[in-house]
Amino acid sequence: MTEQLSYLKRASLTRHPIAQKLFKLMEDKKTNLAVAADSTSQKHVLELADALGPSICLFKTHVDILSDFTPDFGKQLQEIAKRHQFVIFEDRKFADIGQTSALQYAGGIYRIADWADLVNAHIVPGPGIIEGLKTVGHPKGQGLLLLAEMSSQGTLAKGAYTKKAALLAEQFNDYVVGFISLRKISSNPTFIHMTPGVKLKPGKDSLGQSYRTVEKIIGKNLSDLIIVGRDITHAKDPLQQALLYQQAGWEAYKSSRDLR
Ligand code: 5BU
Image (cartoon, rainbow, N blue to C red; front, side, top):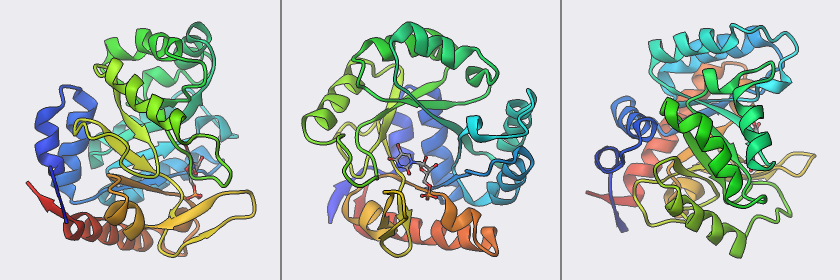
């Protein structure tokens, strides 16, 4: 078993307000589960947030798939997040030059920067994308996750690319709070690792998604947080299913680490 710092300890090491809040509430609520709410109905997404709120630490959205989006979506989601204490992550995957990404983040129809605590970015464009997003998000106390690895089959985000993500995170450590990755890729305890493509049993979907187990991601790969979508949102009883993941995630965290 490797010696690792607890989420709580890590909350005290980071100076980023969202990372601090996230680490703390993970420990308080005993959950490292995030749900990916990929419904095209805003009403359904908000219902999921309210129903699953107690068992999650983070709620992940794709606002641009909503077919009935209204401008009060963010405000409504923030109210639910406050009530149940979870962090909001818009999985926007910015990928343009800094100037354009900043406009996409702050403006347009969705005004993501008005309501999302966290967003993420590909590092394909180089450091300018981080600088651009930072001009919008940092003054608001929001944070950025870098896409260091992806869960899909044949992903090109690996090797030197993944290492570069870790270096860029260090360079912008007052704004970057961590990574989307399949494993722990940085030994800096202030960075959080979030992993999508997680199921209770390994497998894949018909469009290249591959699934790894909770035990593998949290227990063996030492990632910090699991992101689960359809296996919860499409379950007969989503809350019951979320509880299963919450328990599995917490058990894997506790049993795999010699926590300090
Ligand atoms: P699923 O239903 O559990 O397969 O949903 C996974 C979610 O995570 C979905 O919203 C994807 O957009 C998101 N995702 C992913 O699956 N893999 C990645 O590498 C990244 C995001 Br980045």
